[in-house]
Length: 124
Image (cartoon, rainbow, N blue to C red; front, top):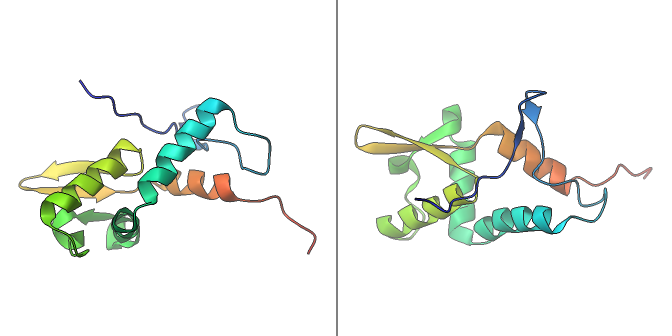
């Protein structure tokens, strides 16, 4: 049994990306929204995890084999640990194909992250 919590990123009624939380400039976050956003930022707060997330997000075709992204200056077991933390935060999904695992960043994750940090337009 897993205690993994996935960020609620898709609004099935509209078929569009829905943020995990409102933009920070819209209104104060609820306790639950802050917990969700904090899990995401905590996962990305480690430089190795941020490099892995970036490697997956920028990889050709939108997905990357672990064999293509593991050169981040740490051992393979440490890479696996960091990828697991990114998955637990709902930032990555994975699929096993034979002996390799492929990781993908869902477009809704990037949209939700962008909306969360988007400020209100200014007249500047």
